[in-house]
Image (cartoon, rainbow, N blue to C red; front, side, top):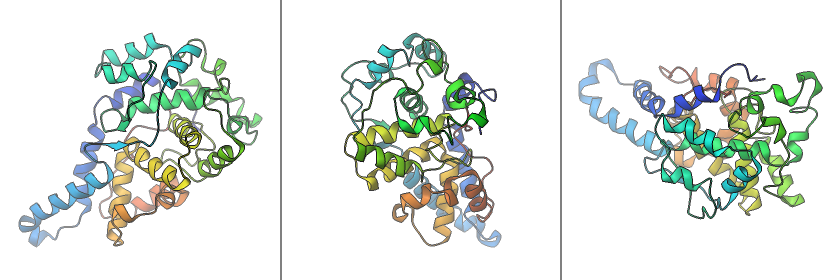
Amino acid sequence: METRQERTIEEFVREYSAPLSILAAGALMAMAISVSPSNRASNAAAGEKVQEQLQESVLPTNGVTLPITWGDLGAKLVEVGAIDPDKIVALYKDREGFPAEYQKLIEENADGKIVITNWNSGYLLNLLWALGLANSNPILEDTSEMMNPAYGGADRFASTGGWTLAKGSAMSHYNTHMLVPLTPAQQALVDSVSRNIFRPCCGNSTHFPDCNHGMAMLGLLELMASQGISEQNMYKTALAVNSYWFPETYLTIAVYMQQKGVAWKDVSPKEMLSAPYSSSSGYQNISSQVTLPPRGQGGGGCSA
């Protein structure tokens, strides 16, 4: 369980202000591609090319287009107070800045395609975090997970206590606003898919969104289901998004799959997101089997 005391949202955003973890991951990934000492000089160029190709397959330079329409959701999050525009602008202004692209996503009629990249992945995470937290959904009422009395209240989690960009407390918005209504079939799909998507910062699935990444992924799943995205495409999109949020993790997993003779384009997104690969313990097991595995998980920790 991730608690709110561990980190602040400001610390988290600092980690996302530049994709340094991705650059470091690429360098370490190059180490993971074995090169015989006797052939090191002659194989250096080939190894670098393989590294670049693998990194491009996991984290495309031009980004990945998400199969969603954002529309006026950002404006609604601002309207209900789940996002305080002054706070979010101030948070980014002194770092990489708050460009027009960011501003548009908290205004009305943001109907253009959303492309997640190394550069904007942290900002999109914050928007989706607010959505997952504020949108009314039965998953947030689960008494065995987020509402389990044994944890002392949902406000004790990083995904709630760590959200400091709202008007008022985060809990005043938790599971409160009907922003993304779902049919029973769509809710069943979100429930099913969320139970199979894990994150390498902890051992919990998206169905137990106790951290920022989990809450953001829940928001994304709700949005995709509401717009008729297929289960297969939901997993595909979730893997792409998780890869930008945890670049070093998925580059390591890609190396592992490559060593097993499976190209990243041929992996099963559902399998890669499951506990044996994407949970904290699953990733640790995978990384232990990769030659000179990268250390750390990239993309920041599980809490805010």
